[in-house]
Image (cartoon, rainbow, N blue to C red; front, side, top):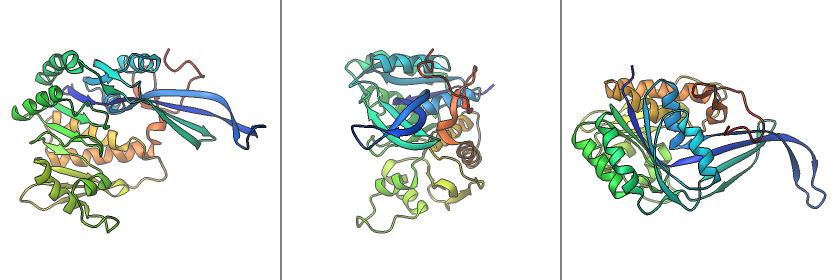
Length: 320
C-alpha cells in the first residue's frame, strides 16, 4: 500500500461548459452557446490531491473553503475522494469556468478570492500536524491564495522538514517562498526564471539549470526541479551536475494540469522511499501521460476516483 501524502494548498472549482453555436445574439454580434453539458471538478491544489488519491494513495487535503454554493459543491467533489481538512475562506470560492464549443475554447471566466479567513489556522493546524506525523511526504501545491503563506501552516511544514519528512513545494508567482530546507521545489521554467531574478527585463530567459542553481541558495532547498514542458525537467542539487530528464514524446494533448500531475507523483514516489533521481523520472513520465491523455479537461469522476475519462454529465448533475 502506498504511504500517505498530505497535500496543502488552495482549492479551486473548475467548471467546463460545453455546447453548440448555431446563431449570434440579436442584440449584439456575439455567439450564442446552447449549453449541452457541464462538468465540474476540483481544481488548483484540489486537482493535485484527487489525482493522487485516484492512484490509491491515502491523501489528506488541507485547504480553505468558502461558505457559499460553489464552496459546498467543491466540498462534495473533494469529500468523495479523500480526507478533507478545511478552514474558512473569505472572498468567495474561486471558480474558473471554461466555455467551449466543439472542444474549442470560446471564453474563460474567473471569480472569487478563496483566501484564508480569520481563525483558519485554529481550524486546520491541529489536524494538519496530526496528518503530517503519519505521512510519508507532504506536497505544498501553492496557487497564490494564501494557504501556503499562513504562519501556522508554515510552522507545521517547517517542523516536518526538521523531522526529515520529504516536503515537495510547487510554488506560485503570487505565493511565498518555500520554507527553508524542503526536499525539492518544482517551479516551471517561467516561474524559476522570475524567482531567480534574472537581470534585464525582456532579456533572454535563464537556462533551466542556471535558474535552478540560483534558487537552491535563494530558497535554501535541498533540490530544485525546473519543469520544462514537453522537454521534461532539469534537477539541480548542490555540488553536483544538473540532471536533465527528457519527457516521452506526446502527440497533441493538453498541458493544463500537468504541473499538478508532476508534483503529486513526485511526492508519492518520495513518500514510498524512491531516490530523488528516480522520483523525478517517474514524475516526468506521469506528467507526459497526463498531457497525452488530454490534460485536466478530461478528468471526471468514474465512480471510484477522479481520473482521465471522457464521460461528462448533464447540466446541473455534476455535484450530485
